[in-house]
Amino acid sequence: MEASDNLPPDIPKTSVVEGDEVVGANRGKVIALAIVLDLLTGELPERWHPVVAMGQLVKKLERRAPREGAVRQLIHGGIMEATCLAAATLPVWLLERLMPSWWPLKSLALALTLKPTFAIKALFQFTDRVREALEKGDLTKARKAVGAIVSRDVETLDEAGVAAAAVESLAENASDAVVAPILYYSIFGLPGAYLYRMANTLDAMVGYRDRYEYLGKVAARVDDLLNLIPSRLSALTTVLSCWIAGGSPSAAWKAALRDSSRTASPNAGWPMAAAAGALELRLEKIDHYVLNDGGRLPGPRDLSTARMVVGASLAAALLGMILLVGGPRRGTRS
Image 1: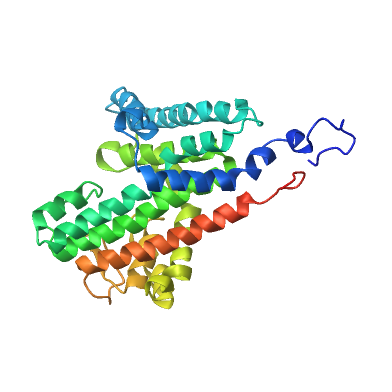
Image 2 (image 1 turned 180 degrees about the horizontal axis):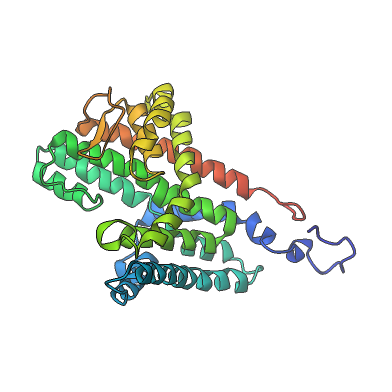
């Protein structure tokens, strides 16, 4: 809704724009500040990290879940999802709404609150630890490093298997841990970022088969839905930007279209296959999938190139979001 032209002269027109337009006009600045903070400081200590608190809440609710009965577990899983999403979004919704618009440090406060929902520096540090261990020939240390972030059994992986797992995790988490939360912040503000982060945490903890077949079904489906757009956006920005790091855009495009459906997840295959094609690598999770089957096996040096390819993709995606939400809005002044 546009600001009225009949307002008293002492009332700024930007202060009466309805809903998220006032907040939205600053979201580009908030995203940029949050990215700078993350690159400078990395992750918060666990005791202060909101995502750690989210995980603790999930654990408490999971312990109360029924151990038998598919319907009972499914209902409890739905209640868990609703409870956790409400607990994650309500506080930041209130913070965003109650923070005075005239406060000079508002953008910094919002950036500090947004920052824990994504992790750029930590993602690249993980890749560097695996690469350094492989370059030193310390396969045991490399397995331990990659095992900290992937769910597969790493004890039997050779050098190529460890490198492949690291590239896959780097590409997938660039989408899940960076593009998605910032995209949802761009659209819905802090509640969007925190809702996504809680949904993703629930999926990571209970959204898989066997023990959590029914308890985690709602969590898995919600996470699948929320990642539909971010995963494909990440693949697209990889295709468009990988040439900067010496990657092949055409190979990335072909691999994404051909191999994205080979993973069990409807979303994870998109950024991973695009990265595999861009790097011309064969990425395999044994007994599960092979991406870009005609590519060569990855090694330690490929992790450095993967870091650059994914970095270029992230830069393209994040810059695009900053530009889209950072400009003046209808009814506001720049």
